[in-house]
Image (cartoon, rainbow, N blue to C red; front, side, top):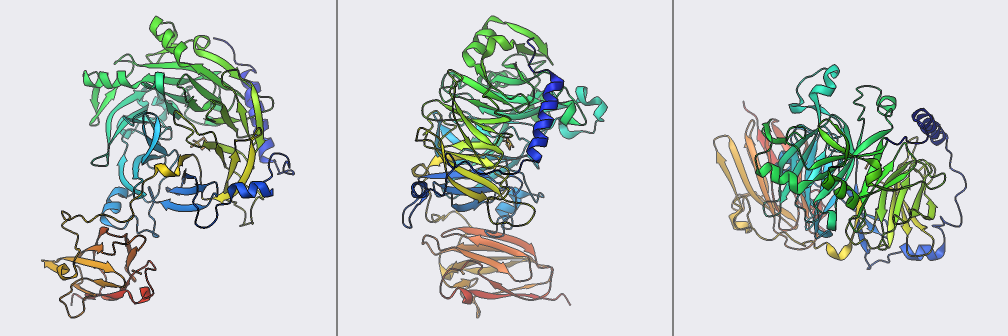
Length: 624
Ligand code: CUK
Ligand code: CUA
């Protein structure tokens, strides 16, 4: 196998030096020519006057906040937060029965890579998916309401970082794991790592009618770390690629030990073939999952050698190439799907690893691209001309280049250390080519100081001119690992929740409100409207809920203001409870009245001139 130059030790030393350089890197003067967001004409490009709306939505991951943050482009204004993997008291997310059940016992998440649902390789604006590296979950968000609809635990997986990416028609999203663990998370000492640990990948489907995620099958890949992935497009639509690191199978001090071998791999697999395998019963039933063991259920999975410790892998919009970025090797490597298919067809393999055929690097590689002094390539996005934009973490820039020739076309400095970048419709089969947003890990002195830790930063770059131009910079919520940008007119939101006469918890008429006691369980069927709560219209005080200490209380609340943006909240002072009902929505909160006493209840969302009057009392009569 061809040796990667420079040699291993040199590379590690080089990388360390780069990291030291990076650690000591203090911001120099900003380049006037390429990074002039103070320029008046640039100010006009990002100014969205009141009454006008942004052209794109940017859905950015919130990293270890567990949430999604939605921004408008080009203004870069934060519009909305969608709570996903963590509680959110602003919306009562995690308190009402549905969201509480979805979150289960987890109190936080680490949301990395959001992905839009796709139809024919285009973002269709219906759903967004994301995974939680912190507690190994996957979530689906509905974009009519900007709410999380389903969360599932992903068994046998520890940190599905390498996800979510969807196939061309959202048939599947694949969730490979970052950390290898024994199947079923059984106890096994690290000395048995190579034998007992596995890097499991899950094939997850989403049913739009029930809005439920489901694990179709899993693949017990070797005990390596899986980093980033992408689905094929057009001619490669049945395929997907994912990067690996730590194919050394190191169990400690990964910084050094997982960087020894000259090469790691890209896993290339045909999901149609895996699907067929499952239909043919070519799997083992393990921990209740259909598990494909590649060394036993052969076929459909291949390894492509790649420069050591790659990070991102991205498929070009035409589906012809996949581009790996080497965080340790300062190069982007362009691989050809066509060449890979030909080699697979001929059975032209170099060797097998863990029972998986390894393709020859030379027979799949199209070109290695190594822009001068560009260090730390991480992720690549595309424009409407098929040109590539790669983030350089260490040299803090975005490099524009041509995958067809390898030629570097332009470079723009960003402040500082971009992880991903998100181009307008950049993961679809037809990127718009108008903007790219750099998701910077470090802001240093860019914004008003807030103490030792600074905000992350996003920078909007205009791609329309001859040179890339940074036209806006904005401090953002942590941590933008990835984002996707969609044309605003593709998102079709609803303005009120439609009446659901079949929902037995919903009450739409004041006279139907009631409080029903069943043993020590109390059901309240109430209404929220401007500017009062009605829990029982026939009672002397319709806005009072009286229970006994120890009662189980279920409050079903419907917002009957069928009027855009008239949202009500519901909180019981001192009871640590809080939910929200959006226009037309019914929500339930369930709890035990374990504290006796007098507790005012009130609407938390400023809904009318008499919002302060939208109150009542929750009275809990003591046991004795
Ligand atoms: S990762 Cu590459 S910079 Cu989680 Cu996508 Cu953050
Ligand atoms: Cu309803 Cu304030």
